[in-house]
Length: 93
Image 1 (cartoon, rainbow, N blue to C red):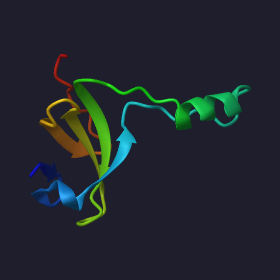
Image 2 (tube, rainbow, N blue to C red):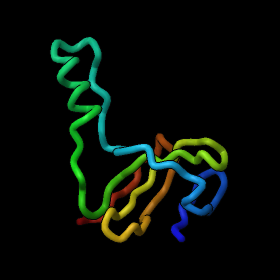
Image 3 (tube, one colour):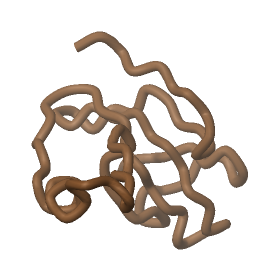
Image 4 (cartoon, rainbow, N blue to C red):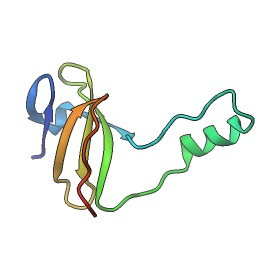
């Protein structure tokens, strides 16, 4: 069983959360000249990082807030959690 600490609800079972993606990406500007290509890259071209990574999780079985999680993709260890606006420190790889 893996636990995730929600900033609003406290520590909960991972089953209450839904993984929603990479928290390091920045949405492209829709007004840019290369917007179609940029949105294709943003939507479909993903890396598969090994080690520490910042991710979005949605607390679907609880408060329904977005939680930023720093998780090791190899061990599933969680180093930090916070609100969407929080800047979380990612451990060195």
